[in-house]
Amino acid sequence: MISIREIVQNAVTTGLLTVEAEEQLRQLLRKKYDAKDLNAFMALQQAAMSGRVRQESRERVTQRAIA
Image (cartoon, rainbow, N blue to C red):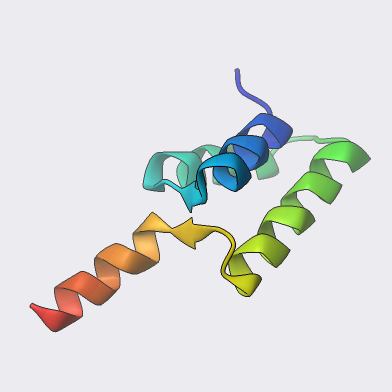
């Protein structure tokens, strides 16, 4: 199974957190994880808040509201 760090790295590299990756994160965060994974998740949150990573799920909601 993919790790939190791998999901974060992919999102930061591509600039997009997909809906599928968000769901994987939810599942992984329900389980036991280490400090490196927690730090990676916090880095992803910072990247999303600063606009360096877009969230596909938020974009879909915005697109539906406009349509």
